[in-house]
Image (cartoon, rainbow, N blue to C red; front, side, top):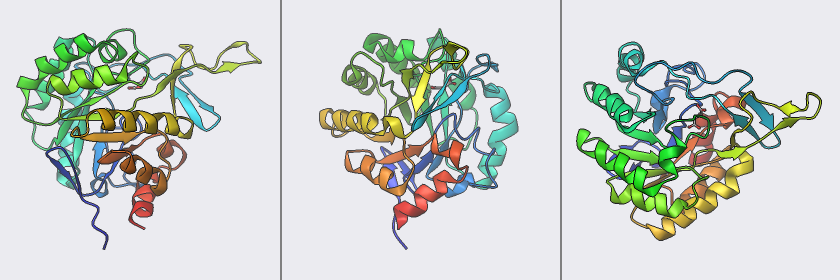
Length: 285
Ligand code: SIN
């Protein structure tokens, strides 16, 4: 038996492989391929105070070594998650990290206040990096002052760990990392998708309805590794969760080597719904 347990700050995880937000539903959608309780944790799709229908279709396109999405944070809303999904995740013994999204500071607070009434949540991951919405998302994650205000406003609402998922599109990723940490974030998730464009030469239009979207997958792995490495060098004590194009156990090791304590597998799940388990068993090997 290989000992794979790790800590992200104060949070103990049975292993360092997490399912990334937006690629694993709410934790139960892929149980036949990957039971959530086998992973270090599952990170839910971003939850907002009310359900959201997201952006118009088409909203995903495959690109060389990756994909671009512009989902627009479609989700069932925090109430439905608490009543319809969380009880089963709890019963299965899954470690649940809830990704939290709001268009305003108040909306982030509303989601956390509702989740605080529930047992069985290990941590919150603040989504301040979605490139596909007009309000919220990157707006907070690109501006150190706005981000510090958001994190320090949410900090008193919970004893649970607050992770902040950062945008690689920020003018200064180090400045926003520092802002989040100084304001009380327990860990940083690095990184969300890169703003990108795919054009269909036949239709002469963007491949997805909103034009731009966020690029993920192997194409971004070297970029994500560089950002994890830089943030780790600048803030060596800060717990980091690495994400960006992880397809194999070796990819996961690379992120651990540059300073991450755990990793998230995202786009790989679209190709193989059991990808998180394959990464885990390859890591173990
Ligand atoms: C989306 O829902 O558009 C993607 C979420 C994200 O990039 O944070």
